[in-house]
Length: 63
Figure (cartoon, helix red, strand yellow):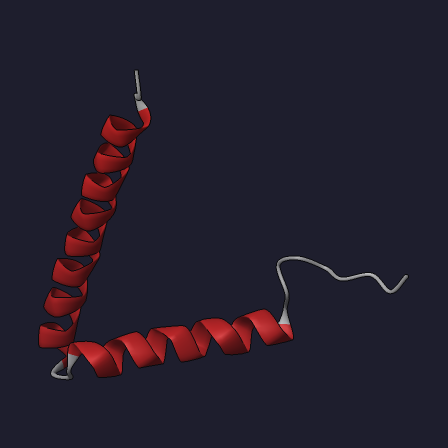
């Protein structure tokens, strides 16, 4: 018997549900700020990237 198909389908459904929740939250925030969802997403990712470059959460060591 192949039990993997059911598990994969459930994972995909959960992924879609999470994506819809995030999209709805971004839509509400963008509406409140008076900007587009794409502009809000770009701002959030840009701030995250700058923050990670300044203060990385995973420290790299030189070998």
